[in-house]
Length: 569
Image (tube, rainbow, N blue to C red):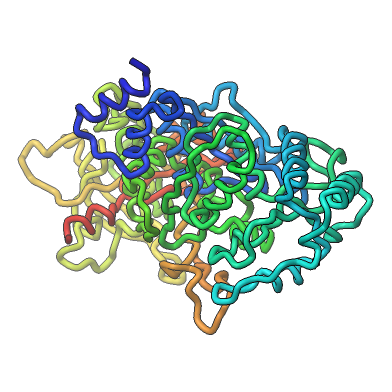
């Protein structure tokens, strides 16, 4: 029994529901198509960084290969030297590995196959199925027709095989300028599918390639290259997003003209997420226009941006699993992605105390100069996480929002005359306040009850509020970057009066607080470390952070709107 069949039967025995792609692969294995093999690929173009939508695609390809005992290749579709860079190749590989997938020794590039593709194009010319066309790009669009009007034959459609071979060779040798000629397939100018109306196979581009240098000035179009790359690599199931559904007949036509292995292309709905743009062109505009700091800006939906923000690989994989695979496009609520993130961080992130908007508290009856080490729980969700020591001193910081001078009855935090619990420490009662010349509160004075250390009062009295805090003398100063959605509109592309999508950018998507204080336990934090700042949310150490200046990004707040939405339903 093959590993693929064994995995398939295990899936069926568990009564696991199969999406339409897995169901079809299951049938293919039962029917011994491709000898029961399953071989997928993820083919990014190295002209930008991967985003959460790409994560859906590569998680699907790698997970299907894993589930059915098959293989998955990483192949770069590097057929456009004008927009592609080695920098993007390296970043894409880093992103995929970080999310948790490994292509092992199966790293390929479309440019590896340029000569073979060229030879196959020559074969189509010899078979009378391709010709060199001198129409400009604008004329080509005009000759192609519309959805309601058939196209018309190019005046160069009936060139002889000999002339086409000669011109194609001269195109390859660099004799003609960019755009002077192209190679087209002879299919059907009256086809209802515009993609089948003599599509362009090759165009002239005098541009240096990041891998092949100046060896080529003739580059294949995606539709010609895609199926051939799959065929060369022995791919069995070529999984694409839904916009390629109308390209499938062309994918099949090219392979049918050659005596080659013919993979099966199938399409699935791409990911659309609220408050997010997924177009690589639009993401590039955000970067080039200075709307964000770069591809890894924590407000970007790129994998590098999510990583810098503090997302975990497990949260991304779980999100992709939850949304599943469908045949029709839909809009997924960003709250679901954040729910998957909280789910993971709640289990894995150590708790620490930090104060973002500090207000000084002085405990008048606490001994001067005393530093008391109190036990604090690292993660209540993980019994093995243990405890840490948190220093307690006479002067502390609490959040400004945790104090109100004239507090209403239902305000359960600190106010004059009220008693609250300090997390892991003591009950304290506010006895007075100090204001500056502008009437701003600068200090709060309190007394503490030594009998309440780390627990309840011996006399049984209760308090309704528990506040987080840090020692003023024994804490570390930090910068905290507070991120919100980059766009104010749930669907950013929808604008009034045909405005550009950037009109929906949220001006408050980033706020920086320079005067924050965190526990001394974070002195050795490293970029990428994730924490729950108690009562404030989840935070991640930014790559800009150093021992001289700690920098933390807010990953996500504690409030889970997705859970609330599900309860309402």
